Image 1 (tube, one colour):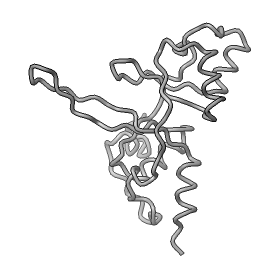
Image 2 (cartoon, rainbow, N blue to C red):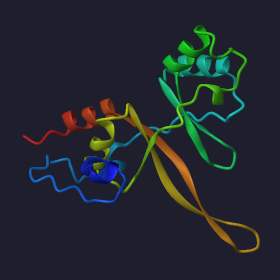
Image 3 (tube, one colour):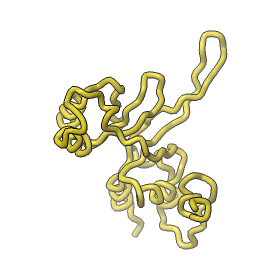
Image 4 (cartoon, helix red, strand yellow):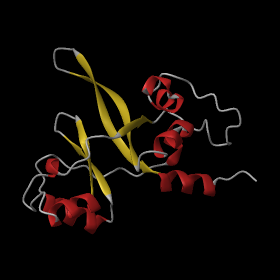
Length: 165
């Protein structure tokens, strides 16, 4: 059961991690990674256009976000190419046909320890930031904004550049 798995409970915010010998970087906030802004695709972008843009810009993956701000999932260059080449998707299909809809989100204020736990199982995490937005009538709602995509390589690069001697 997930509820008997401390790792799952920690990743999902139900349990604080009790690791006794935490590395020096464990409690540093995700925002210290200085991530670059991600490419974001709207759901109607075709697989062909997504492949072209990802290759042209040198990205491996990108979030797919509805105009409402709802994060629908992630597309990866390799998964998109594999799906098209195997016939499971056409170049003209929208990227929603090839998205990963199972993904982890992490906030800018979360620590690198939590990120490390997520990256043990996932290839990436979507970094989100909650933003309060107000309508003309004064009512408000909270919207999640995609701030970046973080991979194990991003975390490893940060640690190796800042290693305490």
